[in-house]
Amino acid sequence: MTTKQLLLLFGYSVFFVASVVAMIWWQKRQRKARAPFGDDIRLLRTAGESQLKHVIKFDEDAFLWVIMAGSAPVLLGVLGVMGTTLLPPTLHWAGLALSAVLFVVTFILSAGWFAGKSAESHNRYLGYFGERMVGEHLDALKSQGWRIFHDVPGHEDGQKFNLDHIAVGPTGVFVVETKTRRKGRARPGFESHKVYFDGHSLVWPWGEDNHGLDQAEHNAQWLAALLQAELRETVPVTPFLTLPGWLVEMKPAQSPRPCRVINPKGLDKLLPNGAEVLNSTQVAAIAVKLEELCRDVEY
Image (cartoon, rainbow, N blue to C red; front, side, top):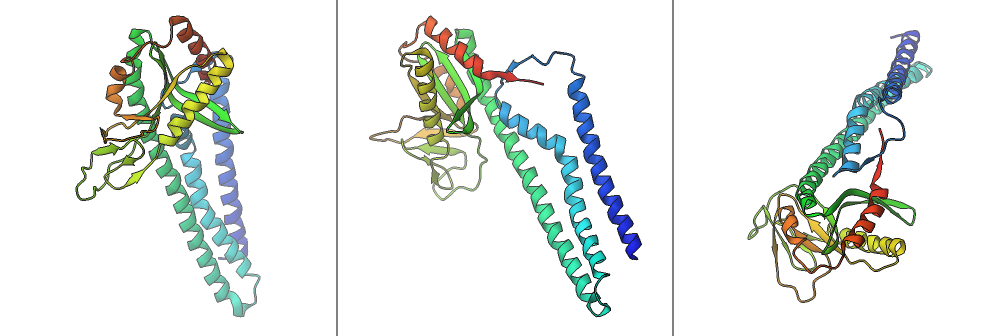
């Protein structure tokens, strides 16, 4: 292949990728511009809102990422071959070998990068589905006058985060963190569908960790401080960690941590089962504040 042909191939590849990027950008702009409702419309967040946004973004950008991942090795390989033509004839084989190595390395890195993006999207969708499951169990409390909020945004020290679910009712305010984890091989003496909570750590079939416990407790503390500042009164906030699809069993603990662990199927029965600590006026005031935080979904 001559230098002129290589230049034409390189130029066409760059033009093609740039055209695809421009078309996708234009289509997104047109879809937003032609919405049948005003730009001031804001909806409440639903369960798994943040996770779903990541999944939708991957679906929208996947084609572009495939083009980029597939084009990068070719473009760099062509550049390497073009550079080889500028070398003395005695170094041509060395230049071609280097170009081939560059192509293979870039191909492996590009394929690995895209595979990582795809795996992240699958994990996000699993998390979204788990939050939807928990949301349905919590929403059953609405018929009893409870106020339920999902994917509540928060920020602290310049960091953004979200609280998966908040339930507000006569027995208090509850922050519910959802962790949806796949099942795997179990150690001898353990069942693959069962997780134990000993008051401090989660004992999984494959090992132990605190995944989700610290986060639920931190979120509860953050929300309690926020409500204290906004309402000028102390509001009890209880953290829960829920594990969709897992059978949760408790082990005796002498000094358990504040967070409680449960399968989501028991939430709509457990949360109302307690002494009343909030009156209807307090519930309404808390709900107003949380709705202000959650009504930010725009087209």
